[in-house]
Image (tube, rainbow, N blue to C red; front, side, top):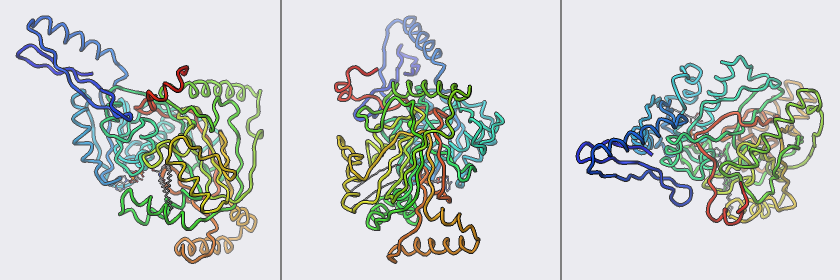
Amino acid sequence: MQWKHMCKPHAFTVHYVQRMKKHRWRCKAVTFWCSDELLCCHWLQALTDLLEQQTWRPKHVLVYINPYGGKKKGKQIYEKKVAPLFSLASISTEVLVTEYANHARDNLYEVNLEKYDGIVCVGGDGMFSEVLHGLIGRVQKDSDVDQNNPKVPLSPCNMRIGIIPAGSTDCVCFATVGISDPVTSALHIILGDCQPLDVSTIYHKKAFLKYSVSLLGYGFYGDVLKGSEKNRWLGPARYDFSGFKTFLSHHYYEGTVSFQPAKWAVGSPRDKICCRSGCYICRQSSKQLEEQQRAEARGLENNEQEDWTTIKGKFMAINAASMSCACPRSPRGLSPAAHLADGTADLILVRKCSRLNFLRHLIRHTTSNSDQFDFPFVDVYRIRSFQFTPKHFEEEDAESTDLGNIGKKNFAQICTDHPSCGCNQLNSVWNCDGETLEQTAIEMRVHCQLIKLFARGIEESQKEEDKNPSRV
Ligand SMILES: CCCCCCCCCCCCC/C=C/[C@@H](O)[C@H](CO)NC(=O)CCCCCCCCCCCCCCC
Ligand SMILES: Nc1ncnc2c1ncn2[C@@H]1O[C@H](COP(=O)(O)OP(=O)(O)OP(=O)(O)O)[C@@H](O)[C@H]1O
Ligand SMILES: [Ca+2]
């Protein structure tokens, strides 16, 4: 809500948020007229006082715009749809339109963060990932935490990030707000919403590689991403084109997956209930995790060696989803019951299957009320960490001769460059929130609620409320 002073006659306008269909929010206005000037002033003063009490609302934000994300409309979207709302809400801004990849990330290591109440990122998941790496890295640096040391607990980031969607998938925005809509996201920022978010760290041989908040996927989604990069000029359609080609190539990959189940977690990946605003499961799970970590610190439980489950096999896809990964292509996401802030990820293993079966599994991502895990070749686990070693890597490590490595690297290269050559590609690549990783043997660990967003999670729709009347 916001007001605008009008001199004559005595009147003021209140701007407020109205909920529309499908989680969309719009800014509406209502003007109050009054013949009594004093009464009008009293109202104005009372409203101003109320607004000033809302200390969680940001007053000064730092905005990063990727002018080349999605359909290359980031700058236009910000100027036309977002900046006017920020100025109406008296939010002052400092704007940086990025000039090269990683400009925003590097800038976050230099700026005086104390000046700002939040960071706004205009772009897609890749741009968000840049801001995420910049902010987490900066906070660790300021608190003398070595993010490259997997044994040291990371410092949580209190500065909130707002996402104005202007990318190709916008999965982080969609899965935390319920819609990919710049105006809705701007209104969540203005109201000062706060949604904690789990972040996963990825390591190769104990060396830190990347952070991930949405999908860490090997096999199908890795290949789709790799293929899509050659066709960036197609814009968001590059994923569908590459998805179709990857589907037809129908590769499977051999390797070993080991994971630690999240024993303390309250929910399961097959739950019918999804993560919604003020989620009870997120609150309970994070509490239980804190207790478990306290017990581990006192040496009552040894988490490092215990409870690892190992599965060796041939996989079409290995997906670790730290959140549902809902997006316009798949409105319920890769793992519809995954939670934003419960300290866990859902590990989905799709084993070698026929093309038809894989298609049936994929199609279920697009329809409501159908369970994409209900196939004999799909398994799903709620986990705190996992590691993957490709079969090819095991052999490579055993031989460990430079000559052998070079030979295999070249072979993989030939196959990637000639997908129609008919030979079997040995390894896939990891898709980490829309960016490829160079290493294939990796380890991932979830950090509960490491960052905060200007969002509130997806609000329960009337239909859902009718189905779950007893939910908190
Ligand atoms: C028949 C239709 C089946 C459609 C199945 C759609 C499943 C879509 C699931 C999307 C999950 C997105 C997870 C989010 C990942 C983001 O961190 C990342 C960065 O933005 N985006 C992508 O990697 C971008 C990933 C984009 C993946 C697109 C996959 C398209 C598959 C098309 C298969 C066509 C088969 C047709 C056979 C006749
Ligand atoms: N000025 C720039 N020039 C070139 N690349 C940039 C620039 N600014 C940011 N980038 C990079 O562009 C990449 C893609 O951006 P972004 O995520 O906004 O769009 P997208 O890839 O179309 O969407 P999505 O990630 O949702 O699929 C990011 O990895 C980011 O690092
Ligand atoms: Ca989670």
